[in-house]
Length: 115
Image 1 (spheres, rainbow, N blue to C red):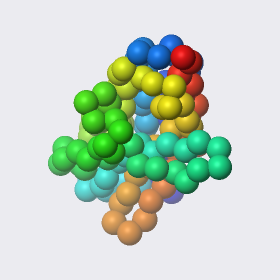
Image 2: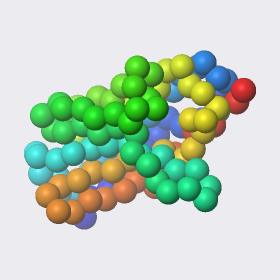
Image 3: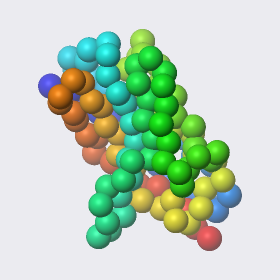
Image 4: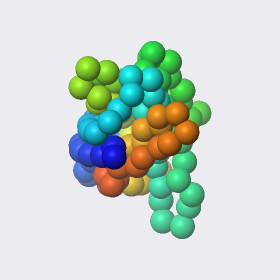
């Protein structure tokens, strides 16, 4: 069983920054994809950014140039540096790990950006 624990959410003013972290534990194969998704009430969960164990990244258009995803393979952690935050970035942010055909979600961390 894989467990993901997120941290780093909170309240920030527009234009500010936050750094989210996610630590994975359990049986984790070296080849995997880790990523961040977000969800607002009544909306579907949407992709924010992903990163493979080899370091290849993928970003949603609405965060390009503002957010940076990174990972530490030795510690099975993934980070999301969020800069120039906007009120529309307010959401619950979820960490996800994909290993082969299986995936697991974290419990989510709230990010609130005030105007």
